[in-house]
Structures are given as C-alpha cells and as structure tokens.
Image (cartoon, rainbow, N blue to C red; front, side):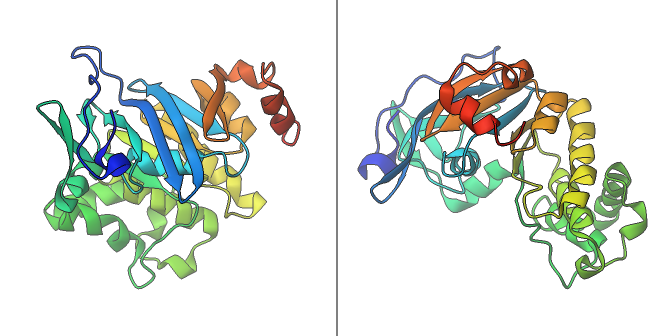
Length: 272
C-alpha cells in the first residue's frame, strides 16, 4: 500500500491479513523519512498474539521510529501496519486509503500500550491518580472500578505501598514501573517498550526488567526495543536486528550467540 502520506493523495491498498489467521501486529513495506534521511526502508514484520519480540540494533537504525509508527505517533510514508486485524492510522475504502481523524486514531491507540525511555508521569498527581487518569477520562470507567484495577496493577508491579506517593518521591525504577502500570490500565492487546531502561541508573535496571519478564510470562504480546541482551535471552521468543532502516536478520534468542550478519556480530560484541 502507498499511504496518503507518501503522495499527498489517497493510494491503493495492499491486501490485509487473512481472517482466521491474524497476527497481533503485521507490518508490510513500512517506510519513513525525515527530510532527506530515509529512516525506515521497507520493514516487513509479524508478531503473533502472546509473542515477545525484541528489536535490537545500533542507534539510528530505525527501531524507535518503527515502534512509533505502530501506534501512529509517526505517520508512515509508505506501507501498512495492522494491529489485531485493524489498519492503523488509515481507513481502506474501495481500494483506496484515507487518513483517520485524530479522534479515530486515539480510539485505535486504546489497544496499544506504550512505555517510553522517560516516564512522563504527571508530577502533581499521586501514583494512583496517574494510573486512573486515562481509564476514567478516555474509557469512561467508573472511578471506583478504575482505582480498584489500579491497585491490582500496582501489586502486579510490586508497588502496592506507593499508591499515595508522588513521582518525585520514587526512584527512577519505581517511576518506570508506575509507567508500565499506567499503560496496562488501558487493558492493551499489544505493549510497546521503547528502551524502557536506558534512562535508569544501572542498579535500577533489574527491577524494571523483572516486571517486564513477569508480563512476558503472563502471555502479553510485547515488542521491546532494548540493548539488554540478558532480557532478550530470557524473555524473548524472537530477536530482530535492525540497521540502516532494514531488518538484517531475525530468529530465536540463540541468534545472539550465532548471528549470521557481520554488522550484527559487530554490534553484539559491545554487549557480550
């Protein structure tokens, strides 16, 4: 498919995923440029429901940009992304695609949770208020119901005693775990993690990764951009290496020990 962003006019659509055999995330030919710099150069990728996929590669390889395209924080210049069978950011009609309105894009994002490098918690709200805000304001959940679910999530990430604390009273690792709980409060079908430990002091990384391992063990579909090789070994079903806006190679975590591509081997030497 060529999206409207690619040409300025609606384009033709490629066939979507076949019914009855839907991956949770399906990307076909995804392209993205910033001015003359082509960051994504035709990414094809599938992620099955319940699968944990780790994206690795050097800075500037397009990993974070691809993640942001999945929930339409970045518009694509070409290609298509489906999440749970739904075309993201566009509507297909009579062989053409049209941009969704902002409200429709927001509705799509409800099923896609995202955790960023920086926690982006509201500093003037307590931990509980941070988690409850979106379910009440966006999903129109009853506040009492949202608070009950928020407390369950805090227990899930090991922070039951921090419901009344403010972000400034928490360590970086605790703030990131609150950010994870906040994303889970929307009951997403797919979770995206964009280098969630890169802003943390080394001694705080383990607690966030432990929370993510628990989520992976519970069967949550996850796409994780990270340089944490140990996490990839333990939690990933598949590792994907990107460089220069393309997928170099992918496979099970054992690929970390026997990469086929020289660029992958060079990158991994810095972490192994």
